[in-house]
Image 1: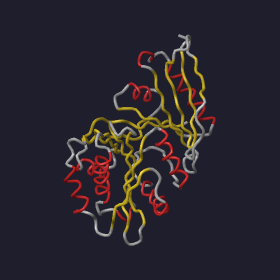
Image 2 (image 1 turned 30 degrees about the vertical axis):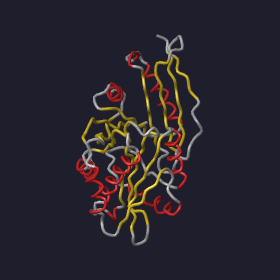
Image 3 (image 1 turned 180 degrees about the horizontal axis):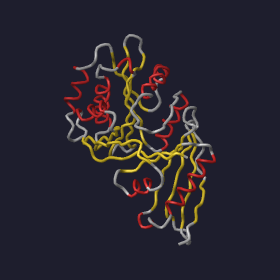
Image 4 (image 1 turned 120 degrees about the vertical axis):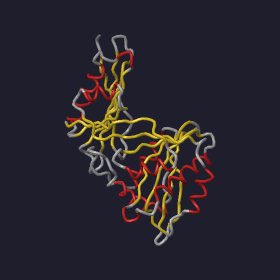
Length: 294
């Protein structure tokens, strides 16, 4: 079968980077698969590219994926990237495809879900008040961080610098207001809502930890937890559990038709696994973060 690989025009670049895209089609123009390559632009991650590759199940094992991968690898090398990362569910055809093409498993993620119908929301709500760590208060917002907290919230993002990432060469993520705005705009552009709960040190009013939740704009289906992190000098006070409990309660209050919340945790992050287990999240499946040196 003759396969045509066509580069596509992607939207304008963001503060985070830009994407390249390719479409694979058959002789009659029927779409067979696609590939997207994100090229990170921020200092500390200019060595890295991220791949998303999909082939229609009926068209697999015909060379479509290999041609798309070849195009992405060539573009990444031309742009001077040294590492290419991609994610696939454990045991899936995608995982087998990557493993056969010089990708190695650099990290394993466990996905877990909390069905909101089963969550003990009154107990969690009581815990937020009764077990509030001394010297801290909660703050929350939708979308972009309020101006009054913006500076310390940006500074608090360094709490993720030592987050367990297995052997993935993610480099250093440098956060500033522009990167935050780009992340918020990306979520809103998909018709979703970003809700953040933060722990604030009452001594100086600074943000010392945060947890993020993205929910569908319809308020139905499942929400997805993004980052949860606490500055190292404020760890050991139960802030992660406190913030995440508040995020669960707020999600139910704001979106009564929301069905569940999904989170993922690296297998070498036992602390966050304990937090999730204690809040009632149950594992659903594993995924691997693959990496290939270029």
